Length: 269
Ligand code: COA
Image 1 (cartoon, helix red, strand yellow):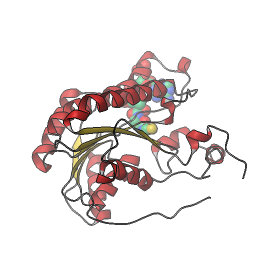
Image 2 (cartoon, rainbow, N blue to C red; image 1 turned 180 degrees about the vertical axis):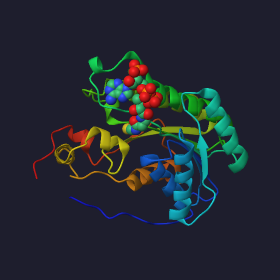
Image 3 (cartoon, rainbow, N blue to C red; image 1 turned 180 degrees about the horizontal axis):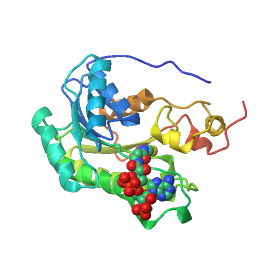
């Protein structure tokens, strides 16, 4: 299997829902924001760069034929800034039915090639950022029935050279989201994770597989023999956040074309 058709369905599955998406100004999370908007949700996307956030909101509106995607700026490492951005979004859009912690930092480096500050930068963005978003966002959730998703990665469960910082941060996210699923379930909050495989056209893949040879190697290790698309991560997020997923909490959904389960042992073509 080398390709798959992109689905472009529209419906009112998420009509009336409000979604706050950190990291939603680019990549996978922007893909999720577009998917949600096409299904009727109103979205706020949060990033560090105001111009990039503004462009992302305009792109969401233009591609989905809607208007009103909200652009917000904050560094997820700054709790007060996250709180302020969320208060803004809630005042404009209403309480959040969906909250996605999708921001991530990554660069390939051996442990001996990174400073303590470099390691901390990724822990702070990924793990502390996810805690900040979920902790600050809790007061703005539409309860019961709110759905939270943390974007994690296969590095959380597979030790990966040159990714010690990401492995540690994502492993922390996995156990954090499961713990919050237990603590917040009785309040009507579901907390899940999505673990994307290699997704085409993302900054992450540009950093991790910059050459055609590396790209071919990664595709060869995926049973489905291709990179995933952003809309396919969007579909997984729709599943977890929609009524179709309403009995699911504390789960991490691999959306990776089988990359993780094959773990380098995919059948030869
Ligand atoms: N190898 C080793 N160290 C590196 C590095 C690399 N390739 N890139 C950055 N660092 C180090 C910096 O030197 C710095 O350490 P120092 O203070 O000891 O010199 C530390 O990481 C923090 O870098 P800085 O640029 O100050 O932090 P930042 O907060 O602006 O950036 C990063 C955070 C480093 C994670 C940056 O890669 C980033 O912003 N990424 C966001 C986008 C992204 O990664 N997307 C992919 C998601 S999968």
